[in-house]
Length: 495
Image (cartoon, rainbow, N blue to C red; front, side, top):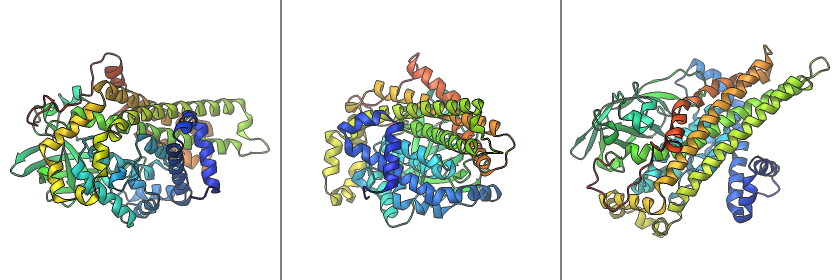
């Protein structure tokens, strides 16, 4: 990208101003910071060229027809490699970690959280493959996503955890142990059979691949919670309906139905029983900072449109001339900045932890193998073996500690609660102060208000996130348990 690009210059100045810590990081890792800036710049351009012109009309259209999906907007994002941001470079992805994706989410959500969440939910679908070290799926599924993206064909992913009678319960060990689950998987020769429903699944109706977490024994869900990778063409899988939504309408939330849906053994991520500890908890440690960034982006968008309204003169006087409006603007900006710093700190915390694994000798060695070797049938059999899966767990436990990951979970949960509450606070205050004004600014702020509520609900309600902070960082009753290779049993029923 030419250095003379004015958008790049503007974004670089804004990003370095919004995130003072990046100034110091830039001295030591200039290429890393420039890559972050370039990603935000791409998101800003995408907003200008595609999201902003379409957002309001798309929001209205999907209120009338919630089965509609804007594939054109997804395809427009392929040139920026939005579907590959979270995919490792060794399988043709961008190789961004949590910080990069969080910055991207804030930028995109400052225009339309619904459009942005298509890419956010996609990354959430990718995350189980990353944290479980599912190298077989890296070389097949993730490489397919990255390669198809370059060819102009989007392959979307999703993650399905929530069940009709168990939403938040399925995202915390103490609650999962007592959850009223309705879905289960049964072991059969060669794989598993899934029966039941998942609900409110972002991208569920449009994803090619969906990570599905469910229990093998509903009487012992915590011990048997297991993750499966489901392809949309698998027999027994269907999408009965897409929900009618109040906000973030561009990203569909669907009900998924599994009726004797057979999933082969090779589509199990990790081992039986690993779905919650460390599976789901690792995913949440990685994903809650970007979700906090979604809330921050919504709050920022509401603030920016409110500021535009405040500067608009009426009868020779603008609202911004009033001290009450000035105080409100200062309050909004303060809260957006605090939410931003919270998610950035959480993302840095997680990346510092995960980065030690990705930069370690074993992962580097795997990445140096010729592609023909990594993608061969023989290597796929190795990746899928119990020994290899245990080895990946051992590598993770050798480079990072349970204490580090638990702290990262606490930080991301704190940021998520702050980000969601900030989105609601800022958009609510803006609407209240704008009153009955029917100008363009209020139309946008009203949309941000509707988009904001979901950020207090998905990725664990804000109440659960606060409990997670308490349990993991105050009374030490919640801990992310990593499983070292030594002392591991036969690979089943791990706690």
